[in-house]
View (cartoon, rainbow, N blue to C red):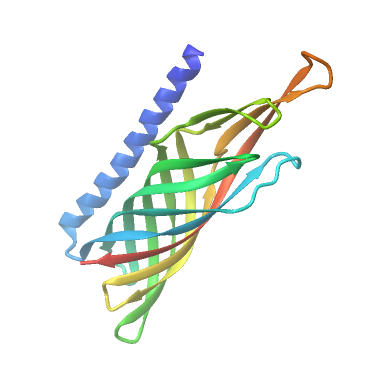
Length: 220
C-alpha cells in the first residue's frame, strides 16, 4: 500500500511539472510575439461514462467549466496556440448514487483557422488536457441491498481534445469539442451478497469518461 501511494504521489507531481512547463513555454511566446490575447472561457459539457462490463449502464450527465484563457497567434498564417486553466465540475451516477467530481483542468490546443469576410473565422483544434482531481476521489456507500460499494477516481488524468470553432470580430469565440481519455477514469468495486448468510463476492470494473463540450471565450 505504501509503495502504491508513493507511485501515485510521484505520478501526480510529474504530471504537475509537465503542465506547469507547458504553461511557461506558452507564456514565453508572449514576450516574442505581439499577437497575445488574454480572456475568459466557460461552457457546458455532456459526459458519458462507460464500463468494461456489459452489466453496468449509465446515462449521460451534465457539467460546467470556467476559467482564464490565453491565445497566442503564431507567425504562420492561421496558426495559434490556446491555453486555459479551468475549474471543472460534473456529476456522475453509479447505480443508485449520484456524486460530484471537481477538477482543475489545464488545456493546450493548437488551432488552425481561416477567415470568412472581415469579422468571422472558423478553425480546427487539437491538443492535450491534464486534469487534477481537487474534490473527493474515493466514495464509499451501502446500496439499497446493504452491499458495500467503492468508487475511486484517478487523481490525475491525461486526455486529448478534438474540435472546431467559430470566431467573431476578433474577440468572441465559440467551440465544440470531444474529449478522449488516454487511460481509465476510475475504478468501481462492489460487494454482492449471496442467498446464504455470510456468502458474498466482490466485483470490479474500470470506467472511462468521454465528454462533449460547448464553450464560449471572450478575449480582451
